Image (tube, rainbow, N blue to C red; front, side, top):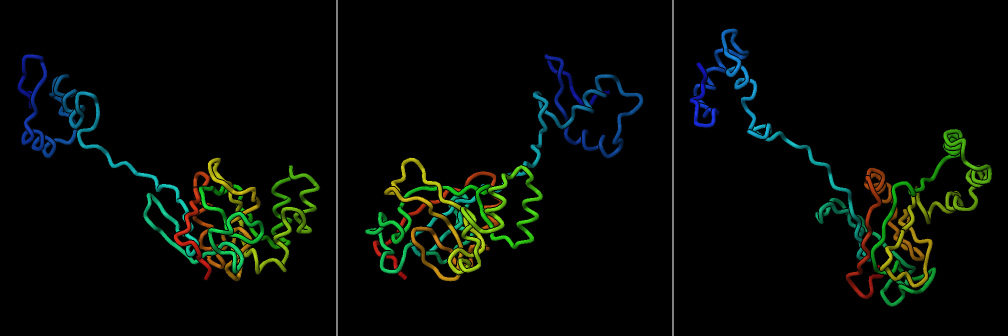
Length: 234
């Protein structure tokens, strides 16, 4: 006999107590069950749309980070919640203020919205690591291989004498279309031994701690530059 009472449409209404008792007594269909009882048994726990009555847990992805720089600190945020922060600076001493955002090579990064692409992240490499990099990329043009080995062109920042200024990593800032850069270009987020730059956002030695957030992002990381004071010189 079914655990359901037939209604006018030929379907049944389950009795939870009876269902629980059946589950305890017989976890598998009984041999003497009718075809309808077997179907009811197999469909137990699903609604009319064949969806589980109890929705399964859905694992949510961690949102990509966003960066925010206010002239004093660089913040890592997810869903507008601060995850981490470090002291940071942009501009040379005496030029670290809003009035000098348009001053090339001296003033701070212009306010606005930028992005940094994980694929564009550049890392200081040892000579052995450069050789391995070349071997792993046989399609690299010879001119680029030579430049990488000799720290020329876009690899000039890897020179040992420039380590104090650049640190171990740098990643270019790409301005959004509505951000006024005053014609300035070649701005980065980078490390170094001392805070301060000619237009980049310098995170100092903490750049090594920021890099994993950028590396692990699935898409370019948004960077908002909003100075909280007119003059933010340290």
